[in-house]
Length: 395
Image (cartoon, rainbow, N blue to C red):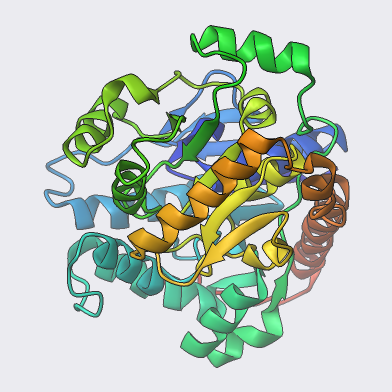
């Protein structure tokens, strides 16, 4: 069996959708008998794989954040030299399988700036310039394969480096349909009791590690317009939830209508909730959208979500074109609140939207790809006079 190295800065499945997808793949590889090494500066105690500590550079080796990022990227690659296959979701000098869940760094950075009301086309500086340079290096040959979570991401990367087309493939994320499912009445009652909510109270969920990019300010302004309606918003994911509670209060959402449970079980949360609201400025692979749909929970999002096409049925969800369309967002949430109150949400119909996105199918494709790469690398090592691995020159 193969030794698989996962290269990342912080190995914690709770950090976001990309990390959760990576952890799920790690568990599948371990179940198949492969050894998984998690090379990172920090490790969550319950994360899969064998932890390999790669220390974050400290002064005086590098005084700037950019310098430390550069040294850390090199250190990760060096620490993984004994692996049969390396997998990375962050920017590195080289890696066997590059899995950019967020798509191109330039597009992601532009969305962050747009969400803050800044010039989306501003030229990147510092560590962001380094990330773009490393990304270009990976796309130009530093990565043997590039896995794209959607066709849109693949087109985006090919537009940056056309040569990556021959080494890229699309593998959409899947969802565990056994774990993520609609909750029964007993489960809904029990879960809502933990939040001190009546069973009939409509519960909206907003889940994001980066709330501003995922449209939290638009959502706050929209909910302020629905102040006369009955609802509670559950906010999960931010590193500093209290900061966002205060921001929501300033934008017109009373604290009494908010809940911020600490690291809740997402299957229980989404299974018992009534609506996921995800008015994102950018999210090429929103795993939370798949999970909500699998739970039979409808979704309001934007066309900038990578799987928005799953919401083509108006009984499944609503897709807005512009994350800044506060009025449109308020109308859409208002329509779903009416359906929830009338009891006309067909959770089985919502769940059917992800019937072709089973996690086992996605994992089988990813595991097969990793095994294929391991075989290629082993053949390369046995070849007399072999050349160095792609992108092996110093950056």
